[in-house]
Image 1 (tube, rainbow, N blue to C red):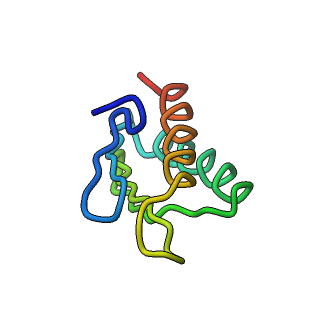
Image 2 (spheres, helix red, strand yellow; image 1 turned 45 degrees about the horizontal axis):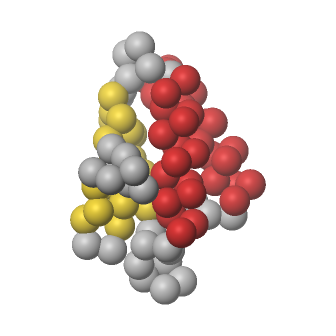
Length: 86
């Protein structure tokens, strides 16, 4: 992908990524850090967590497509994930 999306994939009207961690506690810690950033930005992901896997979808619901805010949150999430790398 290009520099704007990094490891994120554009699927329809969303940016998507899957993160794998060493265990559930690490995955949950990652989600907690993302939640704090998302709340500060007032832009919240759609996500799911199964054991050590976190799937994330970003879109701007008000207009039904990807905006700069989604790319900004994706960059923040990627930076958080890098701190949790095994």
